Length: 156
Length: 195
Image 1: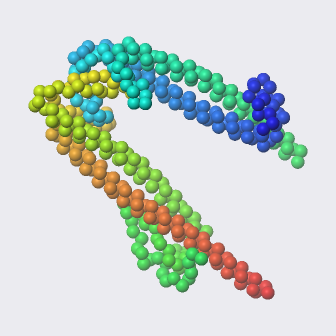
Image 2: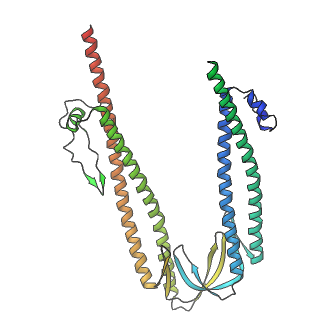
Image 3: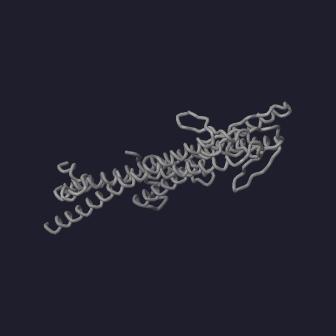
């Protein structure tokens, strides 16, 4: 692709796109659309993960307010609950992935969740920025492509 | 070619069966007779068969979804039965059980389960009922048996459905090939007549 490097740079992007042939523009638009879709999927996944962590954080907060020996219904499976008492309200096991569990105190658990949420939010913001740039490129390529096709149609 | 006119009958020999609302596909032995009896031309017959094939595909998708649900449900019921059996075994020993339970996704806490005579089962639709250990075992066992029976029926339905899909696809191919064959014959006749 002749000007594939130039359209990524931003200010000179339209100049680079203008010089491209119809086939190249189609390829650029398809590529940009594909990347936008992938980024949208990633954003959706991050949003879901953030929501899950926020729920976990609020659950920890709720648990820390309950005294040890408090009566609760414990979920032993997804659909079976038994009456029990809270054994240790000061410590929790945190699943950190790949089969590893770390015992943490309540404040440490909350801190872990908050740090993960902040990390995901910063990633989310970065991805939003990248996605909007890619979308602009795709839209620009689409506009130029339409103009070129119209030009070709009128000349023939 | 797929079929010749010499074959007898149109497939009425193999009776069109039906299984739990899924219509059986008719095996076409002789395309000519089949088209005559059904009163359709080749285009209409192919369109009808394609539509039937699509219907089979839709039903297959639904059955596969049901199968996935049941295959996920059965291990869960088995797990529940194991837990109830463990609670039954611990009953009367005076031994307390320390369990790690999921507070939220990825967060676990510890609970002390003392001797208990009952468990709560989540039945769905925001309904939870308390059962004695014996009642819970009975109910879960019944649910497990029902789920396994349903799965067996579902697998049989899927097998039947796949057979019907195969028959329909073969019929489509044979009708199409027969049409091509007829066109070639007509073309040959026309060429001979011109000569």
